[in-house]
Length: 76
Image (tube, rainbow, N blue to C red; front, side, top):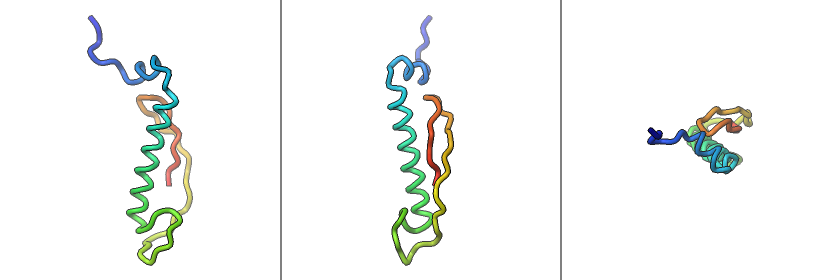
């Protein structure tokens, strides 16, 4: 009997596009975090605005364990 659904990790490892998929996941996560921080502070990174509610304090690098493997992300 065959598995009806292949595990994502197995699929990625077989396809050879492992790095591309991890890069896409990391990029999407970073963009979403930037949008969320921009909404909370009232301005995007580097923007000078009188509506700004807070200051940003850089980034921290973190490893994120996903089904596609380890993804490096920068958290604002």
